Image (cartoon, rainbow, N blue to C red; front, side):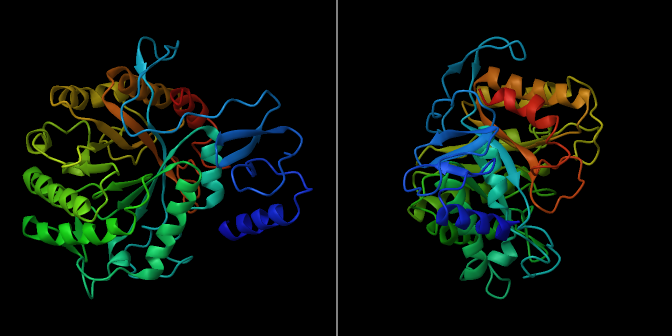
Length: 396
């Protein structure tokens, strides 16, 4: 998919007299290709550096305001979500693939793992989304032979940098995510590993410290570890990131018990994370929430049409009480009426609360096939209903 996109992109640059197909680039600072879209689509400016052909013939919308990592000002009410709301400053999808094949290390690109397709990023930017979480595997980035404090694998790092630069070059935010569940090389990272995590994140964040649109997600879904231990590890990572010179980027921290919003208080996270500190005061608490019976995201059946708002209510109250910001890094559900209503309810209550920076759908990515939550364009199972009904109304 990537090679096809690059071929088409090169063709557009070399033959500017041709019209641009839907979702292709048609303008932006430094762009020298065609600015004429195929019949049935229109060139829409997304930001100063990127305009894209999107379906339709209506007047081109004005450019979007630059994204922000702070809670936005109140936005207009709507019939779907009445009352005062705050616009999400980070809203988008997980772009999964580089963490695949975690039982094969280092693995082979294109066989065991893959990077997100640029065409997928283009599609979602064209829809108005601005945030993309890129899961990767720590053992591929920091080979076990030298460990978390050793040198990074330059080939794998180059793959991450390529997709990160592609996203941020479009004006989006790239959230880099070690998708390891607080486990490295088969062993749980423990409280005695604080300096190790400090050094590992100091090395990695140094590679991105000059890109303000990179967001650091410290660790995906720790589990079966005391909340206090996880909080201490998160604090070590914050300290490591800031010591590298990465002082402007947002940092996301996750709790134990799979960082579930619905178990945030019962898991001990609420007590352990209230005292977290960032010298640059730019971090948020990342939680995840699925809407099936056990909250695992393995069933397309939602508990009820109201379960979305219900499951994040306690977490929202805790964020407010502690003057903290939240971010829902994963949400997913089936493409059916009850689930669509439940997702709408969750996102609506988040915008009404004013304490959530945004949310990401799980998941896009080129290898999901017929997975019921796949939102990979053009034919992912969640594209036809979830995207227009449950997600796009909250872009505002």
